[in-house]
Length: 341
Image (cartoon, rainbow, N blue to C red; front, side):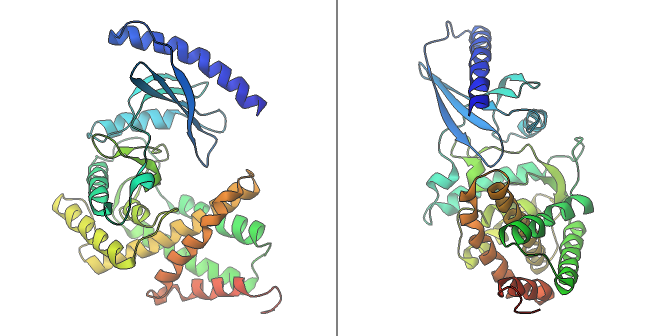
């Protein structure tokens, strides 16, 4: 895009200036000739580039205002680094223009390398980082997962998936079912003990790094339900695990969290129920977000992962009778238009 090309030119000029300062400050001598290549992009407007020269590597974030704001990333990176979590070191920043120069945590995400044989070891490392995250004192000026935020997230489902993807408007019965379901999910979330919540703690945002893992994409952190991140980790957008294995990992987390004094439910079955309901809240939100990314932002590939989230929801509906209204609602959405009129 022409606008992005102009930004890239500005970014390169800024990068040359900042690297000269960094190299001088670190005593590394002259800045070598190097390559700048696209590292990744995500569902937001952010882009990442990898600078490599003479055995050194940096990552450059391009987060165009006003769509993106780098300040939360910078603030939370400093916060997380205090507890030894491996987050990007910020070498230079230009917040008004949305440029950051970061150290390189590697080019392989968990999603790239994890499989059924190494998952136990990788997830154990991920849990250690998450437990450190959750032990941080809740004294930073971060928002909380309150009623308004939880409901705003849930409403993405009827607005973007039901309304835009399916082309359906809830009828009176469906509206009542939706209200009961969302009230239950929100009440469950608010009743949970609160910790610092990453909000996207999943294999795509964890880097194979030293120490392992490198943690990315934490700029939307809030204070909220203790089950949120651990549920997100095992019920991912891009990869699924057998239910029995997920329950074993959740049990490992629950035991370790209790041993470290993190406020989790006293009873494991209570914790599992809270995790199930928290997962349903997130899955409905993500289905809405993926639909929005398709219809608003012109990125239809994310819709391919929507069936995975419905599968997660169906598994929970089968063991949580209190979600019967959601089961009925989803069934009615599968009917031909007018079939239940």
